[in-house]
Amino acid sequence: MSGIPDGEEWGERPEPAFPDIATSLTTGALARRLGVSPTTLRSWDRRYGIGPAVRTDGRHRRWTPRDVAVLESMCRLTSAGVPPAEAARAAKESAAPGPGGGAVPPSAPEPEIRPRSRAAGSLPLGDVRQECRGLARAAVRLDAPAVEEQLAAAVRTHGLAVAWQEVMVPTLHAVGRKWASSGDRYVEVEHLLSWHMSTALRRCTRPPARQGDALGPGPVVLACVPGEQHTLALEALNAGLGELGLPTRMFGAAVPVEALTAAVDRLGPAAVVLWAQARSTASLPLARHIAGAQWGVKGARTRPVVMLGGPGWLGRAGQGMLRPTTFRDALDTLARLFPAEPPG
Image 1 (spheres, helix red, strand yellow):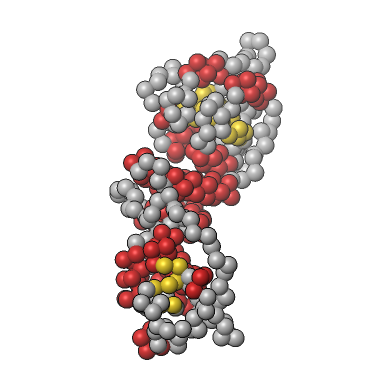
Image 2 (cartoon, rainbow, N blue to C red; image 1 turned 45 degrees about the vertical axis):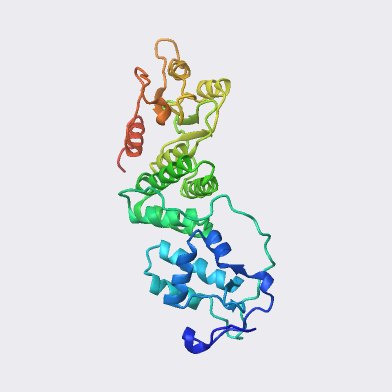
């Protein structure tokens, strides 16, 4: 096929091009797929030799499946903070042919689908940890493997509380702000990021601790108020309480009033955490109803502590109810409801 660069230009032995140009992508299509600009791809081609194996007679770039694999690796490495030149070398080495000398076979042609958002615009992150920037870039590229790897690394390196409060939350908020300012664009980015954050939190959640002695405090009940679908913060809190060995019962999204009341009556919880993301779902009458629940023998009845979580409760006074200001504050406050185990 004409127009394939020789080995001297690329600094390595040329690989045989895939003969079927129908399986290759144009620079614009590949840029949209990776979430980078076409200028970035041309710059990487010129500076680091990460270019297409196929060029048409008019010298237009056509990127084969192997080229795409190299660039996806390049994007993951740069998102993780690897300098571009080093990332380029590693990406090309990872895609080198095996001992038999054969190139990676092309995948089946993909249908041409016009994406919702054309390219990865910068997210308004502000002053955040470096991990947030890499995670945001991977999410905007819809690079699920990189998102998953970076979330796992954040939890492993910093611990759950810091990973949630200083890596996951700022990145998710930045995506949300970009979504809000871009109409319907970036919805897919928010959904993918939320899904993988939920997966990361579940993976580091220990099995529920047993409630223990019936005379001791009941578990912490975690529930979203009716109509509320946002569960990530409760999933993080559930994981954090599990790390502390505290018993929890997680009920998730949009718990109906009757079901929540029945659960409180049956479990006799030490605390009930009610999450409301929006003011439209935050219901003080419901919170007061839960706070007024009682159980136990006459003269020694017990009531649950009610904790209000989420921005939906801002500006709403819940007398006698807890309103932690940070994730760590919520963990510490709930932990104090349980007696410390005696040493030895």
